[in-house]
Amino acid sequence: MTTAILIGAPIDSGQRYPGCLMGPAAYRVAGLALAIRDLGHGVEDWGDAVLPALQEVSCANPAVHSLAETLGWTKVLADQTATALDAGGLPIIMGGDHSLALGTVAGAAAYAAHVGRPLFLLWLDAHSDFHTPMTTTSGNLHGTPVAYIAGRDGFDAFPPFPAPLPPQNICLYGIRSVDPAEHAALLTHDIAINDMRVLDERGIVAPLREFLDLVRAQNGMLHVSLDVDFLDPSIAPAVGTTVPGGTTFREAHLVMELLHESALVTSLDLVELNPFLDERGKTARLMVDLVASLMGRKVFDRPTRS
Image (cartoon, rainbow, N blue to C red; front, side, top):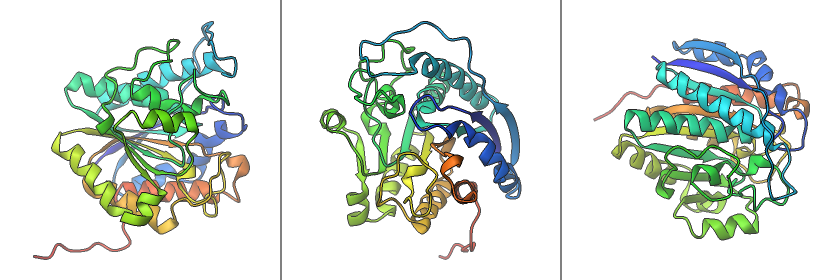
């Protein structure tokens, strides 16, 4: 059985909707640890990460805000994620906005390089998050992690990403909102882009299984970054960046069950939960249920048939 290591990332600075900093507390209240323990796994809660002393940094793009805070969180979360992996656990980083992935995936990449395995990234999100600090017009750094992970230029204020992921190691899954600058940049990278049209045409299962087969063939580690807006806002309203047409309750659980069956997931982000926008904890409970599916909860165990 797995030992899940819960790490709170109370981060609001990557965007402009106050409330994501309450995300870690909401996951705890919604019973994340209990749901994992009930499945027979161990759980360690390492508490919330603490923002270190801030450095003086600047960006040539005047739209960018909260750069010092984002840089601080990136460093501390990279260290904590790598430490949790080195301890043999499954780090589950409870956010917090998606800028936290600048750090968590960096930590996973550093650990993967240390043990000599390739890292893969499954990005479950409405957005591609492929801006750089130089291309963003909103200045919201939660829209930049995938660009950092892929090794794009423009991150001079950040530590060099350890072993940037080759395009084929990144799978964008469920996206349906891409800015023109991101679209143009993605056309120059061979990243698997499974937007909602692809999923409507091919179904939920086939594209995901193809990516998981690639991870398995290379003995890869798999970091999953799950954004609340991967889900349709009708079932998950607690997010400041709602985009209609997201995955349904059944589709999301199917994704999680397939991930569990693959036994490939080595680290997990839960991001963009804003409890201030929730309806009686509806979104937090759904996210906890999805983690339970990822950890092995099933409605019905199907025996293997010849």
